[in-house]
Image 1 (cartoon, rainbow, N blue to C red):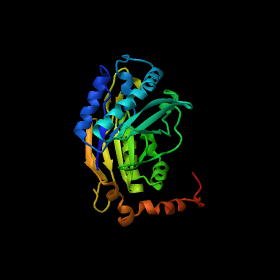
Image 2: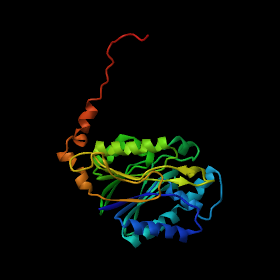
Image 3: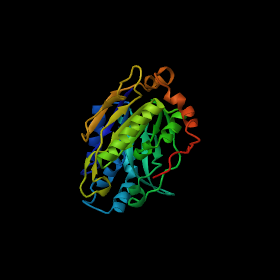
Image 4: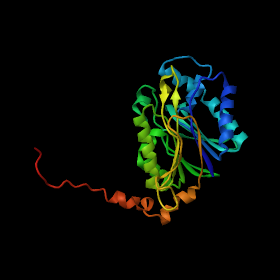
Length: 292
């Protein structure tokens, strides 16, 4: 299977036609079965003929207002290119409030979604968002896929729940504005690949957009992670791009081969997980020297 992880830079485009041309060029070059765009890529919808600057809530509301149009663009692209696409994420209004929603679009134009479940303080307070609810496993023609939106990847039990349910790959659309944040997400993705002995794909937002506070600057590095084991890279990195360089990183991958170490690997992280949990409780506090 050919997968593309896109390091995507949002731009102030002249119209939806220009945005369509931009997507078409990326998808033609990638020529992949699955193309992954990053968290908050859908903020580009608000930038199309949008204001030069606005309040955080106004940017949120404009992106949410145009979310359906954004998804429609990707529906047409998925149908035209015959591929699955993770259409990044962006604000969506629901009965519960505004969520950060990521969409998975199939080649037939059907759309499923996963809402981000663990929000950053900025998202809760400045963006006024609410957390998503259920984790979803997408059973597709190219395999069983789980989506963890950026910060969600930093919590091991979420990835574990998806893999216990049958996920063969975990997709992580990300958006981080500082190198430290990018390190946290990247290292978390690597850890999730080791713990679950599965494929993890990270696609980051990159670049600067003046006047748009939610994505005024973004840093990241597209990458594919796997368990470092028999027949796989000893670094656990299948492929990666350059930091802050826009474009698609493409890799030929076989999720089943990447998961093979679950049965025949040097270690059995996936199978041994229950035993690992049992051994961390209870925690004892033995008597020792008094504090000074």
